[in-house]
Image (tube, rainbow, N blue to C red; front, side, top):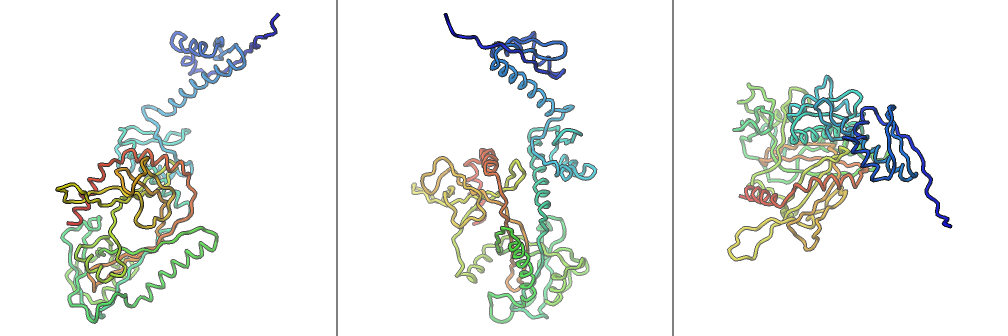
Length: 445
């Protein structure tokens, strides 16, 4: 006599939303037959929109899981499309929805205008919906992430950077005269305003110097910014700080028409530029100097000379709308092949300088050698601009910008960062190197 006992049969009742019953049944009962065949249960659906399952406990559990998957998928599809609008796949925290929509839908309408898609928020449904092309959807997602990213920073009480202008008086006297030289293109500032640069009408006097003159006011302003940062550190904030200077040219805007052809003394220039009132001239700094200016800078800063490096630098947004800065270095490799004249550009496995605020380093699968056609990317957290001082140096013919930046120790989800970058890097190909090389060659020439 056998002691084997058959598993006890049980009955389980599963409620189904009225509008989803047809999906569970399927055409001519095909979906129910499929579930029954996969799980071994007997299934019937009554007039109360309930599925009666009969079988073992395990069989009923498996059948219930399949039925719920059908219902959930249908609900998701329903939520992802409303009146021809599809769900915009970007996570927007509820507290920042207002910032994205804007007063009277102003922000949302601006995004629609820029991207070519129609955006809409439905009452009772989280997130945004859109009508438009796939390319327009991508652009809209980036615009939304940019707004949310800014809202996140503002929610941490991030204040605008301190900005001021200083005119260096080295080798100059108060009665030295200048005129305003109008630029051939008024697009230097990108605003369409007329732009001018200062032109010294006399040669600088005295021995050439590397030092600034009359910097007491400038130093005090810088100390004020540093004192505030120090206070934040003392209050428990983990703050990294960076000071850096870049050479370039300061172009002047907001000049009255009756002033355009006048000459001005150094004293008058300082009063008009360094003043903080609404009537003051507004300098606009543009980074970069001409090759002949680079040579002059190198002579003056010979002891600080460093080797040239070429870097690819861009920013992307994670699904949580955090902005991550990406850096990759390129190096020139001289081919030993006969007839090769110009060096080629290759990705460098290592950065030629210390990299700050590194969250993680992403290497390709082939990690052999110091260079490769495959890239190495440094993913870094972003600095916050704390001070920007535009320093005009009339005696030199070029200017500089001194900036102070800080970076808080914000916790990032490393998987979030890497997964986002992995999707992005799939679009970054070796073809970028030819673009970099053309740009680099044009600059050198």
